[in-house]
Image 1 (cartoon, rainbow, N blue to C red):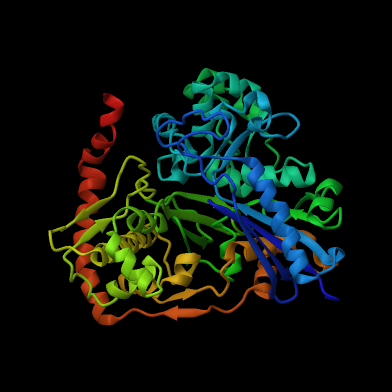
Image 2 (image 1 turned 90 degrees about the vertical axis):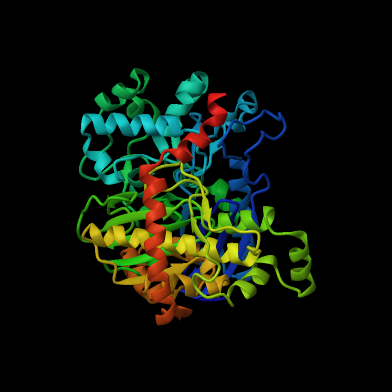
Length: 554
């Protein structure tokens, strides 16, 4: 391969990481590589020591991230035959909030043998929900004090976010809190490892750590009100050097350049959250268009020139996605995870055998049968709260299926679960509309959007909107490559901004789904019934919260 300038996009997901190598001139993908994390997600016990984990824990091993970094970059360089000096920029994104306590030398505490058997020394993955008491307390104190920042977060903080996890460590393992030189998001940590520069992204800080461009972090008084030991948490346990997105964070260190087969000094962009980089990857650089990143969970991203505090919308951050825009984030904590749970635990063995005999995956088999059903035909209605509800900022809510009988079939439940997630997305769209942010177009990417045609048609029918689906199966990684191209700059064949990179490097959509008028009408009637269940179990009844707390009260 001769000529041209290239960028590498790195995307670190829940179960695996990936790299793509992209031509910065036109966005063509030359090579991609994917690798699973060897330790996956730890929810029961730690490796080696076997230390048991508590309820709602989700940990990961940082060595897995470094292993994936080196392996995938080396593979794309080998596959593409691009010369290392032609790679001018690197961008990366990470699931968030995935945070960790690190030592002064930048290592995560669990990487040191003395802390290996202590759960709080490990990486807390985004779906670590064990800090829900801290999240509830933080939210209540903020509301009671009338803190401005809580308005940006739908009046409530998720247990997935940064400071609930930090506070949980302080309360349950003060020795680990003291041992930590600082706490850091995984995206920022990867930048630190590659460049030696501790740069905090305004994306990670804004969406997950309560920072804003106007106000900075919450005050010392607020943290003291939470816990006197937290009063100086910003100065003592964080690096508050917040950098804008789409700029260079630093340059690749010789040590890592050698491992990755790249040139020392290669530009590395400020880290990003995985969902957010999909926005420019789909060439959404305009206001009032929603991007749905559909996988194990779904994130809904919207750009706007207006700042609105919208009920049900997780957060709004100025310049958090693209400079010059307020970036809104909403989401559903479980989508693909729900379907995976169902096929793993609820589908009879005989159905699994039939799928295998037809040479189909169980998902393909159920989709083929469920696609023959009409909306409402099964008399089932479900609520998609298998992992809590972000729209209501409530991790205690749980899933619900209404209408089951002795005649109910697996494909009927499968379709009802898909419909539940689509109804949840429509409810999010309604929240934006009512909050003064019109949604004029829908764009989708991710594994679900590319693999399940029935699902996407149901989403179009339920939302009543046309949906375009991105062409690349590695959309976040492509988006990260665009940030890498902006970090490289025009002198190195890159771009002056991420917006300019998006315009030049994005590809046209692969497919468009349009609503079926007959199905849309039937779903409109079902949606009204969905809202009745949503309001009762989400607001009027404490039943789900009480059920989840039975074990805690024994």
